[in-house]
Image 1: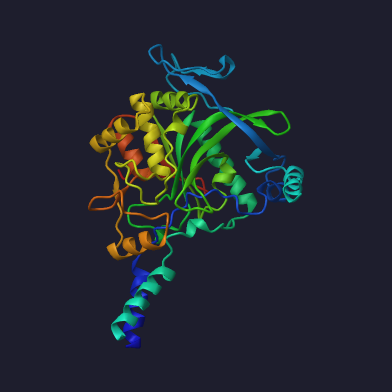
Image 2: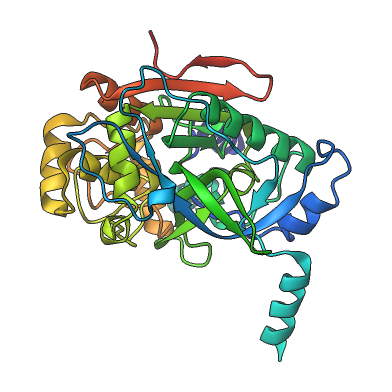
Length: 112
Length: 269
């Protein structure tokens, strides 16, 4: 009977893939900001920064494309371009995590 | 009695041996911060080089060997080229990622969260990114969509890891992404209409997993349910989203980018 139990256990363990999802926010770890900021191997000059908000750049692709622009300075146009331009991105490592001083402050407030 | 013991034993092994809800547990990063930051910036640079403003992005939160056949990426979200305001008042250009995340304390529920590439890949099990770049027009429409309240309106907080994309009752990250894509394509936030079009034009990925496991999962885990499925279980994946866009001429590029800098096709040729 033991052999039978073992065989069933092994077949269940080995034959079935996991259904576990991964759509979980990676916020359970220690502060990413401080971990990143103290990482010695980050590219030279790499700065870690915390984001407070992000505004998507609005893009229009042609005269017939009606898009609502939230700000003219954030509006970019593809009209008349055969190939998209390379976009400029920052070298900073941006995280949604708080900076260490803010994390300490908010935790202290919470404890009070 | 012997039979009962056998059944209980099998059930216990099934439950403990194969997790349905690993995503509930906060998992530590398995790569060093340097490698995660380096890979995240590499992905951002690739997107910027393509001139991509709106992209579907996938990560591997489980090793490929753990995943059911045909499913490679465990989490999908939309990355938008953005002006990012930093906590010191400065601004920077980069990609903000708009996610539907499972609630860590309530696995049957989800919330909308904006984060950034290093957050997105923080606990990835492999430093590989699935990248689906829609056509320019779909990108423009997705950007316009995020200037409206449609992303909030289309969020259904009732979460199922194997949500049926043809049904309104449950939603996971990839179904949410599909709903946003269709909202952009059809210029509507009418959820019934979006589902009608999904049923008509989108082909989901069959989930090849045993009925026993599905039944046990839905019994024991709030994030697994088959209640929104009739017959065979199917769900949306990053690959099926890419295939959907390709079928209707709305795809620019679908690739996998690895930490080693290799760029391979996401869709089989």
